[in-house]
Length: 486
Image (cartoon, rainbow, N blue to C red):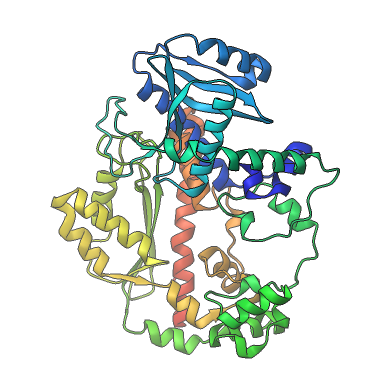
């Protein structure tokens, strides 16, 4: 499957695995996959009669031999390994069906993707070539509409898609892939493949940083331009391979893209402060500045929640009075219980005045509050009233401000240090972004976490969320030209 994404990736996986650097998102996906795999063992073997093969602990050869031995026993097998025709594959689930076997490949996604179909076809080909009496193969993925009833009962979390006919029909195609992959691996040097969309699809490649370091880097990459690109520019890039922003003709740029190019090359920030102030003039003080943190488990842990549902567990809200006085209120729930209802009640109490509520990228907060309103009807009217009061600072930043250091990004973490150079997320201890906040939350809830460490995590989470809302206050002040008392 690495070969199918990029032959160079396969070559590096085999010859230089030490160069691989998986990002935080990839590691989170790996963890979700392992967790879903463990749940699959419960779902497909509720009585615990099956056998789990652990190739990394037992050794590959021993795992392959044990897999073949277990095929003569009427019990589920997990991570059974087979080798044939120049390839090796490990099946997530093998279930006995009379004198034959049914294979299930388990994914933590919420749908069947093209790469999953290829994966299943490879699994089926290798198993059948190894002599397995395989009569059916399916792909099981998460049903995102399923609701966890509690009590450790995960029946229904996975939904199956039978891919038997499709997988079995691709045997000749799979054989060609294997032969080509073997040929790629046998080369003395890595295949010469340029960086492109395949570096990120269907998965983020852990060798991207290495490959990128091997080619000349544009001083000002075209990738910094906001999308969409005009068709003419797309064609120019495809035909000439240009990567440098200064080489892009102005007539192929929108007005906004032209502005980004000018700012980048002149290194002079663009700031239409008067325009920003006018855009915000209708939203007078007093006002709130609000930010949420959420967790989304692939495998729900609280009754009544769904896979990948965004569960808010923390907020920070700054209130700026009409006299410029600033105060802050925080909420966080690290009790281990579902924090949703306590969060909703605390939010309604903290933002009880009918005044503007400034956020950065309002879609996230708006969606979460709508979900909470649907979940807790007694709070619905108050939560939807908060939704109606939201004022988004992101469009203001996009339209009226750009600094060369943003490098094409208008995230608050890119805009803040440019507009307010005394504030840096890097100065925070432990938690510095949303992904780190999720990881910290999970650690705080772990039974292995000591009370002292949990208290440290709580402080770090509070500091991070508080900086998010204070950052919005600072941006608002810069955009409107109004001062406040910190």
